[in-house]
Image 1 (spheres, helix red, strand yellow):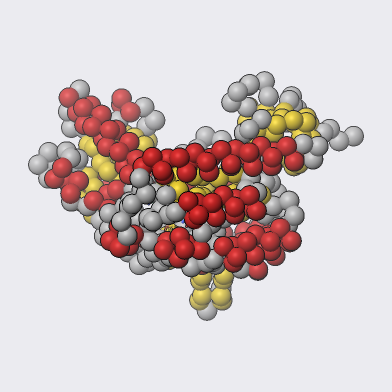
Image 2: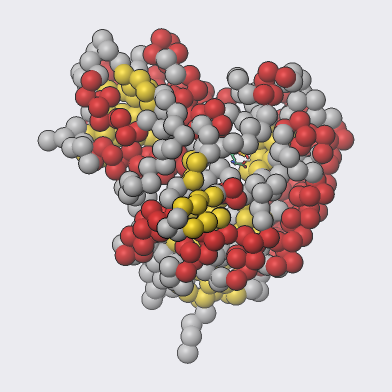
Amino acid sequence: MGKKVYIETYGCQMNVNDTEVIFSILLGNGYERTEDIAEADVIMANTCSVRDNAEQRIWGRIQQFNSFRRSHPGLIVGIVGCMAERLKDKLLDSHRVDLVAGPDSYRSLPELLSRITPTSPQINVLLSHEETYGDINPVRIDKNGVSAFVSIMRGCNNVCSYCVVPYTRGAERSRDPRTILAETRDLLEKGYKEVTLLGQNVDSYYWKDPEVGEVTFASLLEKVALLSPTLRVRFSTSHPKDISDEVIYTMGRYDNICKNIHFPLQSGSDRMLQKMRRRYTRDWYLERVAKIRSVMPGCAITTDIIAGFCSETEEDHRDTLDVMRKVRYDYAYMFQYSERPGTLAALKYPDDVPPEVKGRRLEEIIALQNELSARSNRSDVGKVFEVLIEGPSRRDSSQLCGRASNNKMCVFTDSVHTKGDYVKVRVDDCTSATLLCSLITDN
Ligand code: SAH
Ligand code: SF4
Ligand code: F3S
C-alpha cells in the first residue's frame, strides 16, 4: 500500500492547479491521494503569502497538523507553495515541519519525501527559469468534471511594489503551446466543457520556435477556442498595461470565449498607480475598458482593489471610488493593503495609513461595489443566456446551477438536463450573488 497524501490548498487558482500537479507527480510515484485527513500519512499545506492574514490562517492550521503527530507516529507534515518559498529554512527553525518545498521544486517531492527522517527534514526552494510542468497532466481534484484550470505560464516579471508573488513564484516563463493544447484536448476527451487558462499576467504569454512559429496570448486563445465550439474558454489574469487589441478582438470573434475579463485596477489614483508600479494611468485603464466595451458590449469586467496603500490620501481614495463608478464593475475582490516583507514597497514606503482608515476606506469600497454588483445583476433581468450546467444548486438541490458566459451564477428548475449540458435560460430576477432564471425549452 502506498502512503496516503492529504493536501490542503490556499491562495489563488494557480495554487489549486499546482496541487493537481503535485498529485500527478506523487501518484506516479506510488503515493495515494486521500481526502480524509485522519488517515493521511503525509499532510501538506499548499500555501499563500499574498497578504499577512492569509499566512496567519495557515500558521494556525500547521499547528493543528503538528498536533496530529501524537496520534499518528511517523506522520509527515509539509509546507509547499508560496510561504515555503518566502520563508525557506526559517520554517524549519521556527516550526516543526518535515518538508519545505517551493513552487518550482515539485518534481523532487518523491525524493524529498523518501529522505525524510525525524531528525532530517528536507527542503527545496530553488526557483527555476524553465520549469512549467508542461509535460505533466494534472490530476483533477475538483469533483464537477465540467470545468478545469490549464496553466499557460508561471512566475511574474512585473514587480508591482506591493506584491510578493514575483519573489515566491520567480521569473515569468511561458509553457509550450503544444502541451497546453494536448492537455486541453485530453480534458475534452474526458468530457470537460470549460477551461480557464491561468497565468499571473496572461497577456505577456509568448512562445516562439521553428516548428510552431510565434505564439502570442491572442493566438493561443484562438488555438484553444478552435479545438471545439462546445468548449468554453476563460482566462485569468489580464494586466491592464498589457491587454492587446488582438486579445479583445479574438474574444469578440469566438462565441466560446467567455465574455468576462478580470481586470485588476488596484487603485484609481495616478499617484498610487505610479507608486504601485502598475505602469498604467487611470486614463489608460479607462480607455482599455472603453475598447473592451466597444468590441463586446455585454462583456463583464471584474477587478481587484487595494485600500490604504502607502501614503494614500482621501483624494486618492475618492479617485478609486470614481473609477469604480465609471467602469461599473460586475464584481470585485477588495483588500486592505498588507505590507509584505522584501517587496519594494516594504523597503521604500512606510505603511502609514492607520488601520482604522484602511478599514473605513475598504468598507466604502465594498459598499459601493455591492451597489454596482446589484445594478449589474438587475440589468441582466429579462436577458437570455446560455448556461453551462455545473450541477444541483447548493441552496436548493431541486434546482440546477451553472454560469453564463459573463461568469454569473444562474439557478433554474430543469428536470431534463444534467451537468455538462448547455441550456438557454431567461433571467427572471436576481439576488446579490445569483441570477434566478427559467429554462427556455426549444420546440
Ligand atoms: N497577477 C494578478 C494578481 C496577483 S495577487 C494581477 O496582477 O492582478 C491577487 C490580488 O491580491 C492582486 O490583484 C492585489 O489586488 C492583491 N494583493 C497583492 N498583494 C497585496 C498586498 N500586499 N496587500 C493587499 N492586497 C494585495
Ligand atoms: Fe503581483 Fe503585479 Fe505580478 Fe500581479 S502583475 S502577480 S500584482 S507583481
Ligand atoms: Fe497565488 Fe498566493 Fe502565491 S495568490 S501566487 S498562492 S502568494
